[in-house]
Length: 330
Image (cartoon, rainbow, N blue to C red; front, side, top):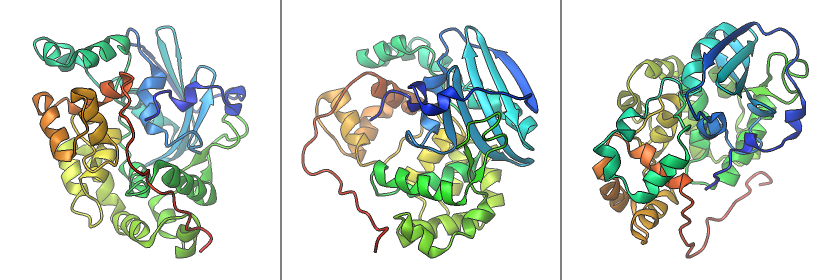
């Protein structure tokens, strides 16, 4: 489990400053102790995610909006959070920035007594050490769906390698890339563009037919997917699970990012249940055991899991690791 946000580390992209007047811009007061890196970390799919790039004071990201693609630069200086956007979707990107920054997320119920006093000491300590963490919400179901499906039943290394390949092959240069934005910043493909990816390219990316078929099946109803963003997290999760090939794990991975869902748990994750069990009891457990352990904090279970991840607990590894398979040359 990686704890250091990749974009918080030095990167070649960090040397590329923002130049040129943005198409849209806004500023907000940062909450006390706010952490941009910790908040936005879950949105980046590994160190080499082409849709993210480091900036000395924050991060770049690129995505699609209903009005078109956008490059968004988020920076944090003292008590100021600033968002600057380029491209056809700039105004929409700025409108979505508060949720992306986690400013619409509230930890009031988590931090309030008597709930807070029921938390394990290591969770309370992790929260004390990380008061600036918020849960970000992208509101972009299609964009979060593809990488989540790519991560089904494979290692993170495999999934992120496949995502990088497909993004660089079929994504588009972000607005202002090489000028205002870093040269390698990429906007993810639209649903229509994903649907045009030929079978041999999925194969070259190391994506098996089951996962690629699930992506294709889901994206054929892309308009319906985006309507899920306006629903509650539980409603969106239920809607996603009506698509064959999308289960509770994939739905949770999506709604954690699209809705800042404070309660969804990635049941079925290869490592999570063992980690939660060890962190809370000193013993590994399975999914059913994990859910029993987390039940006292229903409604805030994802926040508890995030705090456990930041607490520095490491479960001992037993048995063989998942085998990383390379299907690209076959």
